[in-house]
Image 1 (cartoon, rainbow, N blue to C red):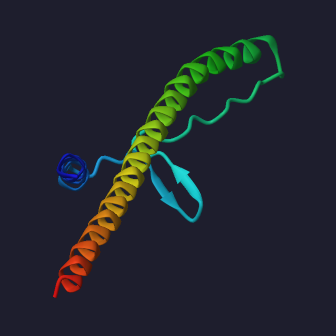
Image 2: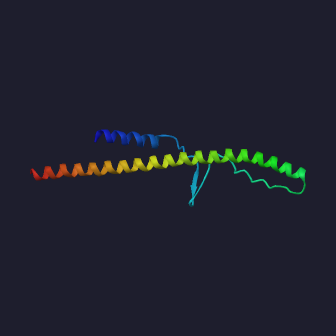
Image 3: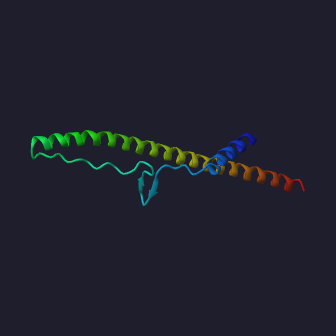
Length: 117
C-alpha cells in the first residue's frame, strides 16, 4: 500500500508539477499541431509549356521536402500528446484504486472498532 501510494504521488507530482507540455490542441473533436507551422500548400502542375512544367516539378520537389518535415512534426506532436493522455488517465485510475482501497481499509477498521465495543 505504501509503495503504491508513493508511486501514485510521484506520478501525480510529475504530471501536475511539470510544465504544460502538450504539443497540439484539441477543439471540437479536431486535433491540430501547435508548433509545426502551416501545412505546405500542394503545388499545381503547370502544363502550359515545357519550361512551366519543369518549374512545376521543381516546386513539387520543394513541396515534398516541406511536407515531409511538416508531417513528421505532426506525428511527433500527436505521439507526445498520446503519451500525456495515457499517463494522465493511468494516474487517475491508480488514484481511484488507491482511494477505493483506503476507504475499504478505513471501513474495515471502523467496523472492527465498533464490533469490539
